[in-house]
Image 1: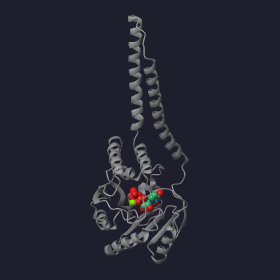
Image 2 (image 1 turned 45 degrees about the horizontal axis):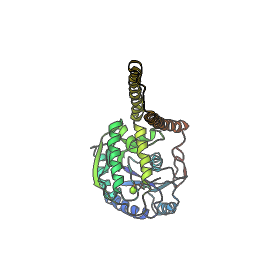
Image 3 (image 1 turned 120 degrees about the vertical axis):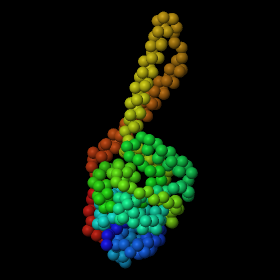
Image 4 (image 1 turned 135 degrees about the horizontal axis):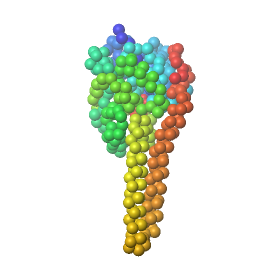
Length: 314
Ligand code: UDP
Ligand code: MG
């Protein structure tokens, strides 16, 4: 009987965890599948730890990894993927937006060899603020135009995969992590299973608009050099343009003795170019900042407490 490891990042999810646990257990017992539930408590301060410890006390299959602080969902997933022992690995949120009822179909597809990884894809964004949907759509369009690996619109982190894929993903030690991009970059045969968006069962989303916006910018910078290329091409174009206009000015002055008017427009142009230069410098700065972070090679997560013998730092 193969073992399924389910990795569940949790950050301040005290309210929803018991509901999620019952729901997931129900599905798993119907599936009759051996499993371990790896809850990664990502530095919650609402008593999520007590809920997890209680679950672990009554259920052998519950493993909790308590991170020493909030490291973010990406690091929480990384901590889980560094500490599983199953033949198949699933990742899911604990707010029931990733319905456990999809697990049988996903696991079935991977086990039958139809695919190496089965992932959920949201087909509509109902229940989400319109402005968020608008930017999300725009982001996917843009990122797919400019990046080396395709990120499917509506792709979730909710997926089931063969253990090898999780091992490969853990071996990719980059700190600027964008899992959707990483999963697509490693390749393998992925089956997308569409589903309709569900609202969170309880608790609040941890993603404000600006946090998501920052995440999207990271996604672009981590998987593409195109912003840098745009900066260089734009620079080249401006240089060429400036050269031509200078020629015109000199010729007008020498041949036709026409002095050039337009002090105000000149100031505008200088300010405009100055602004552009700062903007592109900012883009370059972003890449350098990421390089700096990578060069420190700090661990992705630190586990402060667990009910198993685990890899504490990684
Ligand atoms: N999460 C986490 N660390 C964080 C933020 C979120 O582990 O810093 C977890 C959270 O508990 C949930 C999942 O990541 O299980 C998705 O978070 P959320 O539901 O807030 O995001 P949304 O579904 O709104 O995109
Ligand atoms: Mg959610």
